Image (cartoon, rainbow, N blue to C red; front, side, top):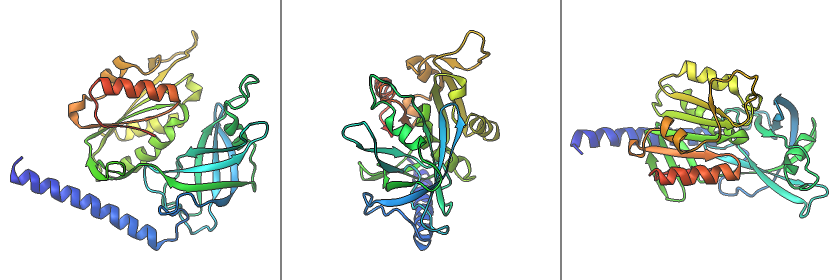
Length: 297
């Protein structure tokens, strides 16, 4: 590597870290709720609204204790919600959710979750989603955070806590299924809305039916508005014979990844979130294709 390239790289890394530290500094000056040093602290928060936004998909607004307080979450982090469920043993359950609101927005956070119908043969299946769906304005939730092993700085730089180092990637390969879009959506907005961030994103997004696609209009708008930074690929596993569908069909597989994702030598970070079977399958495929940097939310 030439001396000039080394200097430029050093300047870019330094500016990204400085930008991140400034964000942290001003976040600390503004009162925050979640303490990274004590992520298991429990906060009793109120539900403001809980509305259906798509087929079996809900958006819940959770009020922070003060209208001027922010969550304190960093890009890539998520919260946990604890609940006591009836007719389930053990009845104390915890699930993790990534807020989709701007992390600097004061007073509230929004989460998105999918409701799963009750299965008489397996009451545990989707039970927490139904617990959340039962919540109404003024109801309480026990919330903790922040959690997560990666945080996004800017310009492709990630703080990977398990490796205790900051790593830069040229491209992000986001592979999501169903409500697994939420951590991707948070990062997508963070990158696209930063005019100085040149990181490229390809999103492979799998759903059963077209009505299941969360934030479909927004994602399509992003692709039109940021064609040099964001490419969206939708695939459906259950397309009706009467439906007009121009996207991909079937589950995300090796050929689909090879078709749309840049090869490993392009310095790609593979981010995965969705159902357990999908995550396991996609992680194995990505690893077999030679991708070294893979993270499952």
